[in-house]
Amino acid sequence: MINSTNNTTIYWSFGKKIGFRFSFVFILLFIVICNNGSFPLFSFINRPLIMLMHICTPWFSKNILKYQYDYSIFSNGSGDTSYDWVTLLILVIIGVLGTIIWTLIDTKRNNYNKCYYWLTVFIRYYIAFMLINYGVSKLMHAQMPPPGLTKLMQPLGEFSPMGLAWNFFGFSKGYNIFIGIVEVMAGLLLFRKTMVLGALITVATSLNIMAINYFYDVPVKLMSTALVLLSVFLLLPYLKSLTDLFFKGESSQLKQINRPVFNRVWKKWVASICKVLVIMLFISTQLFGVFNQKKIIAQYFKKSPLYGIYQIDTTSEKRVSIPNDWSFLIFEYEGNARARDNFYNVQRIGVGFNTSENKMTLNNYTFDYKLEENGDVLLKVKIKERLEEIRLKKRDPKTFELMNRGFNWIQEYPHNK
Image (cartoon, rainbow, N blue to C red; front, side):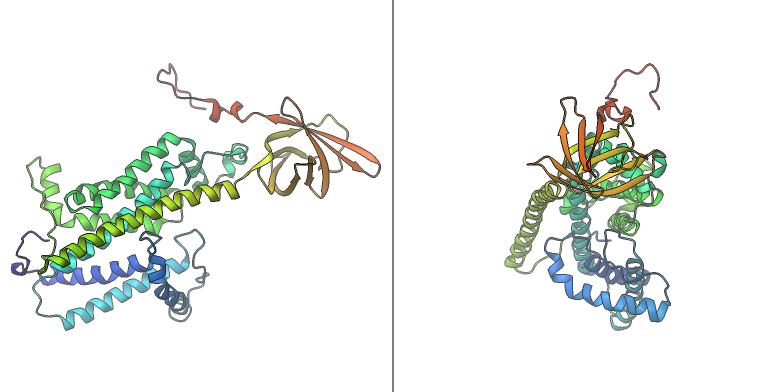
């Protein structure tokens, strides 16, 4: 699209102008409203527009679309809520209207090379910052953690498609690091000389993410599709060169996108300083985010004092404090536990501990507990002058096939269980 240092001599066709006008309006609005934490501290800047959309989108859904789903769920971890999709439709409509108005007003301009350059800057930083953010989380093995005790005891049929995908990825720390490195390589988009290479990498990366989100029903389909399309948008001016290189085997030259010529030196310096400051600010927020994420994990995912999987001993007399049809108790994190009955149905129960006195509150009873040398736990509770004792036999998570199967270079037969 930009192939000459003398941009004013290049004439764009009418169709290209129309396409760019729509792209400019729609993409900028999408990046501003659907920022997803990409730009550091940007939430303070776009907050008024977000609040406006919180009013406009429900009104548009109710009065124009007569939409029946709950369009007032703004943000809950899903990127595919009714609110998100209706907002996308509104942005498309605004893009079309903006294109019509722009076309009627601006009839003499030959090209939009400068606007195109600054649009690609926003797109490059948007994609790079978002993928780096996800990549860093994967490098920490935090976005998709390894299967915990509760997941190890969960039958395959109980997993949702998303839960199955999350545990598949989370099982392998090495695979997380590999994917994290690839996503962090989106940082190549931050520099004009490596933009094409970066865009090729982000197309492949985001296409993989999009496929997982589609086929495993992960509710980030809208955002992952946007990453693919925006990455492709960056490559549009280079399609012929890339086709000649990859499909025809011909030599090809990829020219850098032209940076606007600043008529004053200080403007060039200001642009360079702003770039450095934005990147430094992003790095700072990433470091702070890593520290904060570790703090949150330590605070909200603190292990239970009785951390483990326990099988309830059924050889003792009938129980009153714990239902007789319970077979397993799983203590993973503080504040709650899971019970599995004889039919392997799951029940979430609240639990409290007083570790200084070795007391546990469970199922509305307060037990004295004793940790034995072999890892078993002995529970005692007095019920109507009768002492009830329950033994919990600890199961080692390493006995699970998933956890004890290591890496093997040599396999005489596939170990597919």
